[in-house]
Image (cartoon, rainbow, N blue to C red):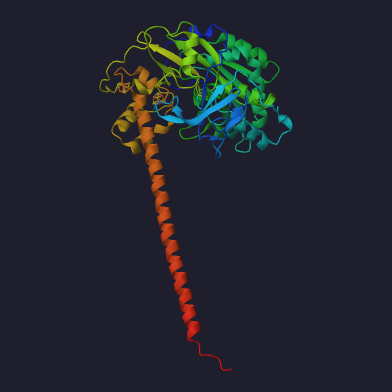
Length: 480
Ligand code: SF4
Ligand code: SF4
């Protein structure tokens, strides 16, 4: 039996998972309109390769990956492109982003799919196919998976599959593991092959007994170890799960790959399987719809489905006060429920005053230290709070601000009800903005210096030519 380890900190918020995990995964009816954002992943936006009026098939690429860190997007069904333009998207800023709007024709007509013979493929060609299939981390991080699946980067000894799903309310991975365990196992085998990993371990929190037994059955004979891990938030954080399963502590500022471990969400493994075995790009994902609704459950939703359409299937109850995308700890309030499902949409929680009472007014910090005790990243949240509040960003960085995974455990335990994570997010965004400005200023300075140098050089060359010419003119004429 595998030895398990503990990570420091962690909390036990109420689970609220039972409501949405009782029903099988449901397929909502095709919506009248799909809005597909071009930027659904970490990195550069995809570039639109269709125009308004074009007819597209299900699975057809409509946005091409741009640059190395990017990923493609596809038509989730067949139909006609209505527009390529700015639309509201699910982002805390509430800002619009470039999207492709598709009107489905109801025929669900597919492009010709090309399954891949992965054991005999060139590793880079296989990775490029995953990039073109739009495979990204579906646990919420949405980082392009082909980049993480590069055996040439670092020797990976252990491939960790993350089925912990530690955040309250969210049950999409639980249902996926219960119903599509074989897809996850087959995806894990492809990932193991790509990374040349020596072992594969799948961690699932012990509050999901049905998922554990389904995965154990599917993994039998495939050399994939399924391990029940203790239920504690945020046990599904990559570094935390790696610590529990392997004992490896990933130090501040380092990545698990530096220590021979790579981690993927179980839904990502399933999408790798579909991309390779059927040639299917990522067109849908499982979304938990829960909270103040009559029928909480999990929906296999096409990317671009309006969230309103999903909530209508679950039947919104009276007294709703908005919705959260993600869980109550790490998610954010949706600016509107008309925005589309994107690859990062694992859960939609319809709020009510009863489920989410108004938060008490924040009080001054009493330096009780509870936030530090709960922090799974071994940070000093109260210090980070002071530095972020005082806009002393240099000090915040010194105290490892960027190791904060924004899990919200510190805010959850704070007796003064200080929204600590909001301060960290603010500090991080300010630092990024300053870095962007600095880069822009450096670039402007470089261009200015380059232009001056070119002008000087041209002046010099001109002067030299003139001098040469006058020297030639001054030579005495040869006698004939
Ligand atoms: S838990 Fe809240 S009150 Fe206590 S030290 Fe941390 S920030 Fe201050
Ligand atoms: S939000 Fe950041 S500082 Fe707070 S407990 Fe989580 S990792 Fe620690």
